[in-house]
Image 1 (tube, one colour):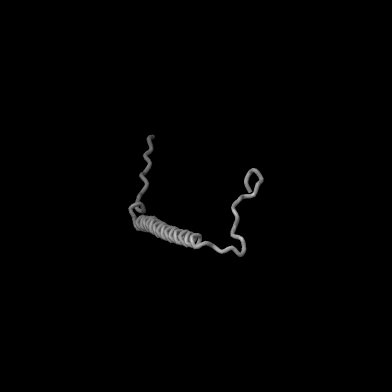
Image 2 (cartoon, helix red, strand yellow; image 1 turned 90 degrees about the vertical axis):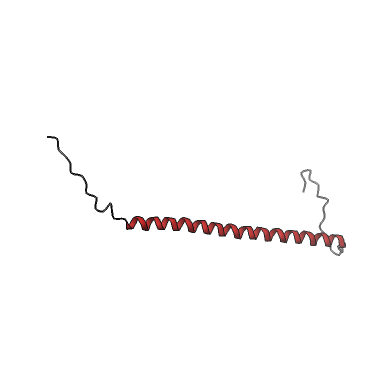
Length: 88
């Protein structure tokens, strides 16, 4: 309904009314364009998911490599605390 309270002049197809060939052709054209749009969006979503997985895997592998390389380092294990010098 419009803001003035009147019903819209657009009517959905009445029962028993046949569609014109031009209307059928237009519906097929719109359906074809919609199918192409949906396929394009599905491809875009698939590529975005693949990119996200690759980036997430890269970050995770760098993190794990860093943790493993730090775990293997032993130079801080032999660190002796310096002796305190007393000034008396």
